[in-house]
Length: 389
Image 1 (cartoon, rainbow, N blue to C red):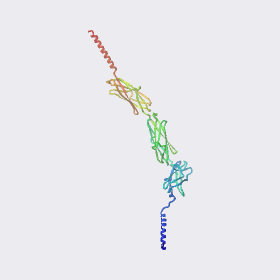
Image 2 (cartoon, rainbow, N blue to C red):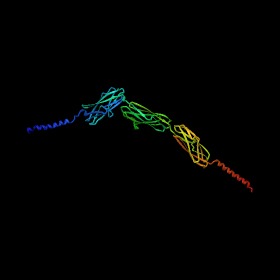
Image 3 (tube, helix red, strand yellow):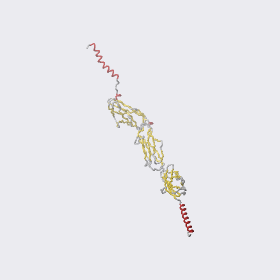
Image 4 (cartoon, one colour):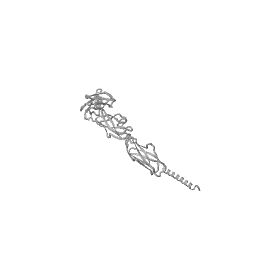
């Protein structure tokens, strides 16, 4: 090789090293912050004394690695716990490029005063460490209230009615709360509470500033006496007890039975003559019956007149006797006829089919006997007068 060409050869040899150096200057360097990151969507929050707050924390690494976690700066009397997978944790194992989530639960004592407090979460993987500052501002006025409301605290109906109350649990606090509801009625009553439309749910979560629906179903026992009955409801939201009293007014059941004193639904009489028949009206319900009207449907030309066309009142579990006067038409032939007698008011009614037998009038029997006697007397007179000839 010629000595005159050696500088060119040296330049060609040095060219790859120069290109490599230039390429390295164009690629950004990987820092510790890029290799390990610890983030949360809400690093600063406001909470009330006595509340529990939670931070969701994502831990991510460029390569799969174990990351140790520690919490510092926790004020005296406070507690801060890292949780993940249902456990209290001190470290997590990450996958490359995929965040692993943990939760930091902070309990603020009721004696905490207004002011800002900083809790620091430190993540360490190998020689790399990252800190995540979390700010909690204690504000007494942010406590808010959890209330239980209903538009209709009292319902009215008969004892065979199922009463449904719609309640609203309003969470006016700055944090989500887990709540449960218990409802108690008088002995023998069936009372149940349903949370957010789920019949089997024992508890539910009411979000901060949100509302949740509650349904209370009340079924009184059969035949319960009329009156006003309390239903006690109590919601438990965290450490809070929220009572609410509902009321059910039982108006009683309405039931009426119409019959006769001996339960026989038939009678007899003669055409054109009045026959009196007693009727028994029995209030078989639990509420008084008022203004019970009596009516009758009878064959054409017949009349049925009641001594009381309207019974003013029949107390519960009591009976009233009325009398109906039945007059068949004067030209009614002997035989059986049907009448329908009905008792009713605005709440209850009953009716009976009454069979009435029209008999031959005794007058015609007497007239027949008289004719027989007259004919016999006439024959005797004829024989007496003309029998000797």
